[in-house]
Image (cartoon, rainbow, N blue to C red):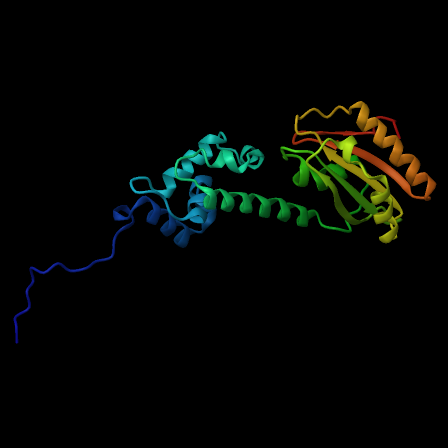
Length: 238
């Protein structure tokens, strides 16, 4: 039998320090949980692979630097902005976009339907995660029962000037289909300015009259931004 050659290399498990930066990140997550990881490293877990000579952890730090290390800013960015980071192509940009959309949907679900609305702040808390950070305008209608509980919230329009796409008939029709007793209107101002425009005033009055004609309560119209809101009712304009 051939003698054992002790000079042959013996495989051994790598210590964490000997691992690549990407493997170190995964090892920390497996051992201690994702809560201990900085945000850039969490993105590295999601996006998985980097470039030759540029690990995914480094790429994700570049990504977070591009938004001043704030997810709040990242949510406002569009796909093309993600792709300005070296190594992030269409696939990774879509992954980032999908994660941010999941976050928005999760936040929407946590407030949920059947939330009772007692004041304009309650509406803002429900809707700011949906539309507060969007780079384009959206109109949403909120339908309530006689106890002022949310029956549903529905996106009516997306991406155009509010006045040009406002559809009174659609909003009223959806209210009647849901047997709603009250209606609220919300839309966002991507500029961050909460003050209503002349067009905002016009559609508010139009919806007020439309709801009145169908014996529906028009409760409020909110203009929503990431940092605040304007309520027509709070301002004594409804």
